[in-house]
Length: 126
Image 1 (cartoon, rainbow, N blue to C red):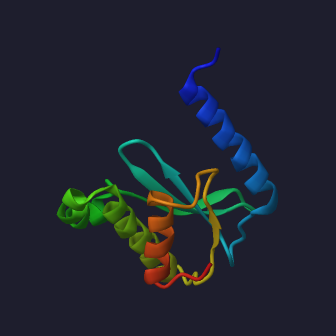
Image 2: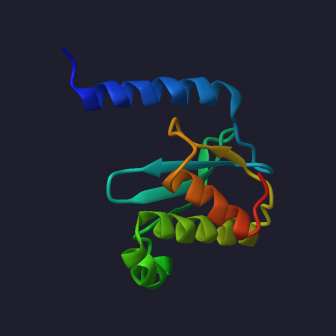
């Protein structure tokens, strides 16, 4: 019998493939993709036409390290909101207002939802 964690990973990857069939990013409307590990959260803007990552942010990026340290005691969801706001700030600097959200196979709740809400608070439209 397969390990429970492997089964969960395979299920997420199946969901990811299903989502990626429909979701694609362009230079005008890049794909905002989220990855979460047990300790950290990552977000990046991807232009799938040229295959480039436009910008990326994680909870240990130098720009937001101080802000993350302040909210770290409130939990991972608070940190995820900070990451969402930072990716929105960087996108707006690049004159990107609209993005396509890619939850990367994760369920839309908890930290993934917090990144999306932080990005919306920061001024991005989904």
